[in-house]
Length: 322
Image (cartoon, rainbow, N blue to C red; front, top):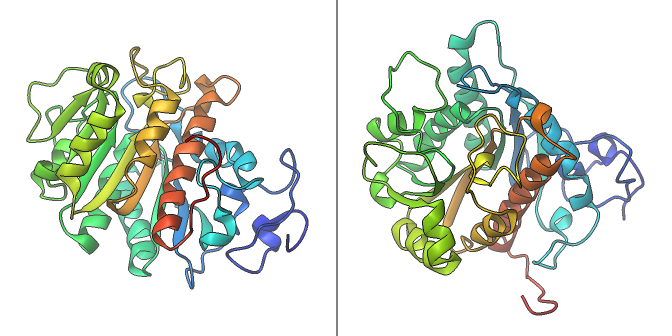
């Protein structure tokens, strides 16, 4: 422990683990240092608080704040089930939130893409906290500009492939737009947890929630890994992939979804892929209860960071029967 309290603004380094009150102190994601300086940063966490693209319930603009608050316990102990200290194994910074103008929404996509591109250009990876799911579209564009067409792994209750007008800001059409623009390679991409109907799949492999429940996590992961192997992989995690019992705080809840444990196991099973970026979106705190949804989002984001730390050399330590 290098200090005590408020490491979000008092820590001088990027890979320090301070003693904190879980219930007090300055809150950043995993208590990481708030900074715009990208020197030495391996992963930058950034919020994109925008929700004017929703079709039902709003509130996801408050998602980044809620996910950060829900992450405090994860900054207390070594990671489960990995067994290493993530906070000293990986240089993580919290870059705060992108400045977006809600009164001039046509400027939002470009602002998101520019903020993401700045992080990616530094060599750091970006963990993005939404915001509604439309924010994934400019995030995908920024990543594809660096890495080329992306293998998308989309956790979602909805395919987001509905007919599109390119002038619209719509959280139900942007994945189709990304495919048509060549940002996403559908032949390498997979959707997980879908339980709404689309007339076409646009070449994506669609693993519905009933498929995951029936065929199991192993079969699901085999399909995802086979399709995405060797490609740059972007994970877009819409929290409504979880059943409303596990994620009530979201804008378009659909019964029959994944349990939290299934989502976490699937995330941990993607370790061997070339993970280039991730977003966690659609957390709407006004509809949440006891932080259930925000906690799930924080854990999913945390486990993605653990996968990045493993690739950077952090050695997992197995304790118990995993």
